[in-house]
Length: 251
Image 1 (tube, one colour):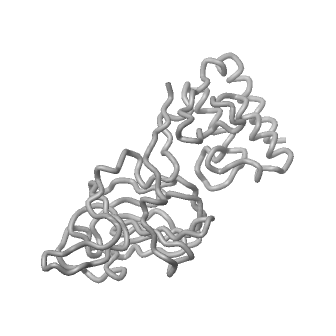
Image 2 (spheres, rainbow, N blue to C red):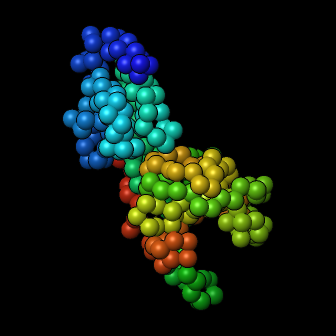
Image 3 (tube, one colour):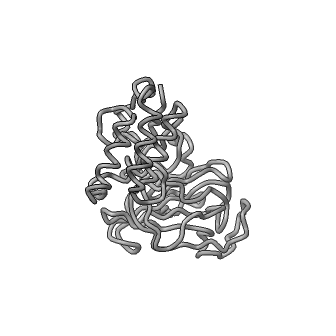
């Protein structure tokens, strides 16, 4: 059996060093990629657990956030193999992108426009339906939840700050809408690149594209919208849904 052969070889490599290669997790972040058995460290036991669940045809018991080590959206023998190879080289990961955060850094200081009504220079009120982050062009944007991509626009070529909208994507420019498993629609606008397609199943923390200034964008960054009840659901403040970034690093 191929699975048995692969993992028996992996176990032989890891037997001597598995204790030394255990990785401590920052439990405040909630999850540790690769810590399949939940004991707070990543080692050969996690590889074995993936193999056992696969052999029992119970891969669905394993969380994608924790067990999908190669990031292909499913749990299979390649996750055990990739994790084992990483451990054999002396690491499991250098840093894990924290779940429910749109960026892999502490982003609160990058918010330049908040959700809700804003008073304009002429005294009128304008409703802003999301929050805007100012970040460099090309910064990776992360999915803030597990879900499915339901809408993508990636045809805008006007990736530069501008005072008037180019009209692409309804002035969102290149954008992605993610319908989460708990019923929220998360839309990322003004992207420079998009790395997902309609119908893709996405996991929390996965890179979905990069920031830009496509559409109606006065500077490089991200406009993030959150609604409950699908694309045309009730808009909510994204800050009530997303979480601050808390990296998990190898100690």
